[in-house]
Image (cartoon, rainbow, N blue to C red; front, top):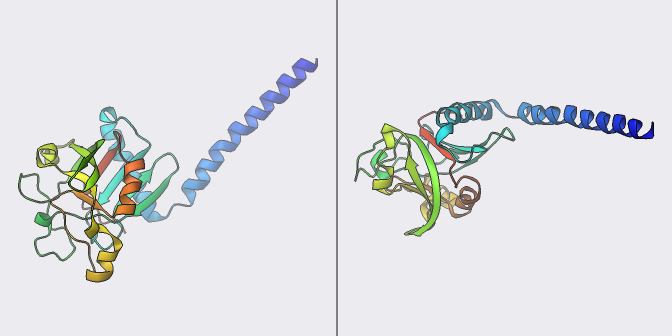
Length: 205
């Protein structure tokens, strides 16, 4: 009888724990702003579209080039926690020839120095011109030349917040996703290794 009673109590405890877990998850989702909910929605939709090609599906990067470079527009959408963290990111010279901080168009053409629209997969780390960087692969017709163009995710001095304080906008890359040094470390640890990045002009405020 004692053994049966222990089993009953153990089962009741597990049931109570299981009942408590969903409540915590929903509570986190409920605290998200309307902006974050929209970003999470984009991340979930694109994840389902490309899931079969990804190695990791916990976090999706959403680069919203419908916003000026002075705004945090590179969103790390954590689909497990229902949370969004946003960072600064630079776009390419060819996408903003006037250098006013707004992306005007995308391009997939070699030597265009422009940012490409579409879905990317993050590959391995490597050491290049800007130090430790993350190699990227294009997953759409709109960014099929990513590897040949050497479009990567890397740190750059002109993508630090100090550039905004000085010029009111970030500098421009050669088409790469350029981030400030501290922000890039977040990408290095949380976005690399077979995760999805989706870039487009979304304009989500």
